[in-house]
Image (cartoon, rainbow, N blue to C red; front, side):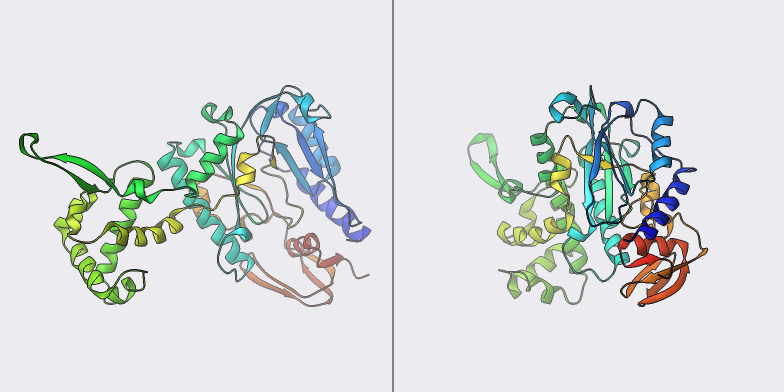
Length: 391
């Protein structure tokens, strides 16, 4: 960006910080802080190893500098302002999850589409955190990053002392890495009358069992019961590897029978008759890929990571890094709710054509000088596709 653009953005960000309500993290005086400033050259670098002794000191810094990006450490340190990491004396760290929307599988049609996919993935992760790990909604703090995705922050005592290996295990669990279906579809010993006979019976975890076992039971029954009512069920089922027409017909028959479905909910696989567990595993693999959460593992595993400050602005979009309650997360529309700048007209010089949807409007700009709303001008300048003014 040129110098006039840099000055405009710094001024706009300073004006925002002069009245912004910034949500500081717990024990913020024990955190390392880092900032990236707007520059008119190509090179950007982070000013880090900062520490603040009071809320006012931090707010004064934000108002004075108007940084493009503001970060704090997930770690708590004894000496957060020490210039070298080994001198800081690590004490503990929040548990952080990052869903980066542009890293998710599948095609992306637009920025709005990408952000919506990211929100769905975030809600999927939330099911694990509450349903599997037992956190309640007020212990899991959601944040829209202001750019491409969402974060979850957890500052509960039970997780603060976890090291990187334990945090990687959590990511492995929610992403289904290392999930062994042989242990889900297991066999257990059963004993006949008076113990005279013994055999092994195939079993499935019941629907109310914790962890992946219960998840898989619920998925399998929900998916196949719904499919059994579909007139195209046979065609869909024979699309799975290893499932022929006869097996597909048997599956439909089983999952149309409420009594047999009830037995399966309790984990009794004999209700399937002669259908092999390998057939179920084929279907379950689809379900696992749908249920697993796509989390940025290096972010969670890094116990010294810097994370964006809720309430700050994202220097690549001009949008607000927005703290959200779980209820707010479901209704949140980032391209409307995270916009903080006004509708007043600003003159910009567009360097290359660009399209984005903001505040419910399709914004399309061509090369050349034009007037756009302030929120769009800031966004386009932050993205590097426009300069301030007409020169």
